[in-house]
Each structure stands twice: as structure tokens, then as C-alpha cells.
Image (tube, rainbow, N blue to C red):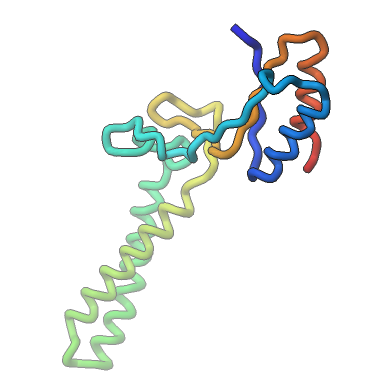
Length: 158
């Protein structure tokens, strides 16, 4: 099996520069190639869609959603009570609608506030840390000296 070095890039322009640098460094066309990895969540590996039930970085999102819903609901209830007092015809409907809207917005904000990139050391198969998608270059480094040169080219700042 061939030994490969793979580099990920943020954009296609950088990828093109690397391909040109590999060619200029004497790598043969059959020794390197480019491909694209789709972003996390788009591989349809989980029965409900996505790649996993949840990402390691989102493990606390549920707790954040509950706390946010409570705070948002309370704020919405206060706003709804003021609206109900100011507009007697709306009354209870205004208070209920404001509470619901506040809870919804609060749960979204709470869940988002508890998500992060995830910690690779705490990842499990059920809650993985998914690698970012994007353009990649793979370089075969079987020839003597090829590995060091390929790493040098892939790590050059662009």
C-alpha cells in the first residue's frame, strides 16, 4: 500500500497553487491528486440524516436549550403581561404568544451558546468530532526524499 501525505485547504485557489508547486518540485502527475471532502453532516451515515446522532461539541446543547427556554419564556411572559395590560383586547393571547416566542428564541440561543468545536480526546463513536470538509491534495511519498519535500510544499503559507 502506498504511503500518502494529505493536506486540507480552505479554498480552491490555494489548492491550485499547491498542485503547481508539486509539479514544479518534480512530482509526477501520477504521484499526486486532488479531491473534495463534503462538510460534516452531509454524508448521510445516520438513519435520521447527517453523520452521527450528535457531535461531541454539541453534547451540552440540550442543557443550554432548556436554560435558554426558561429565561426566554420568562422574559416573553413579562413582555406579554405588559402588552396585555396596555392592550386589554389582546389580553391572555398576547401573554401566551410572547411567552412562546421568548421560549423559542431563548432555547435556540441557549443551544447555540453551548456548542463548540469539540474535544478530540473526549470524542466517542456516538459523539465524534467531525473534521471539516474542503479541498484536499494527496501526495504519494514512496520515493526517497519525497515525504519531506511534500510536507514542505503542503505547509507553505499561501
